[in-house]
Image (tube, rainbow, N blue to C red; front, side, top):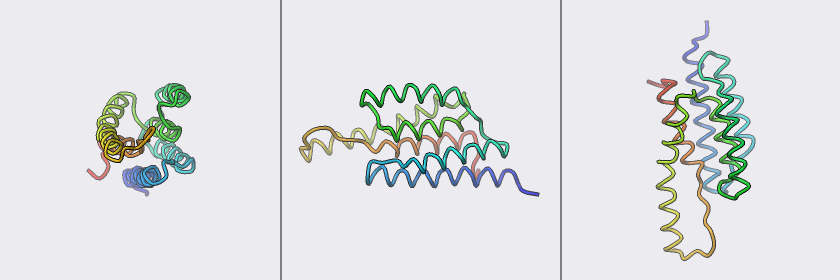
Length: 151
């Protein structure tokens, strides 16, 4: 018999691995690949199929619509919207606010770093943030609270 807890932990750790890969590409190229988002979404569905996780369509759908509006207003990148939408599918409704709070808190140092960098290097124009790093940190902290991965 397959140990369900081990399968779920493996799936969550694999999601973390792909999130770390997306961090690398976001930092280096400012791109979050559609392939990574699709893989994370498929892993989320697998995690639900094996008995853990939630399929939180409402939070994911609402954020997708709001995120597209923010993207068209040039407030956020499309990759950030896609990855958050895929991750929100796995997060139970009562943990969504916690996820956004942690992600925002982790994004603050990124913003401060960008402001200092722009000031020191005297960069003309805008600077982009690799917000995938904060999203990854927010998801890892949030998933530790409700999936009990490796605890």
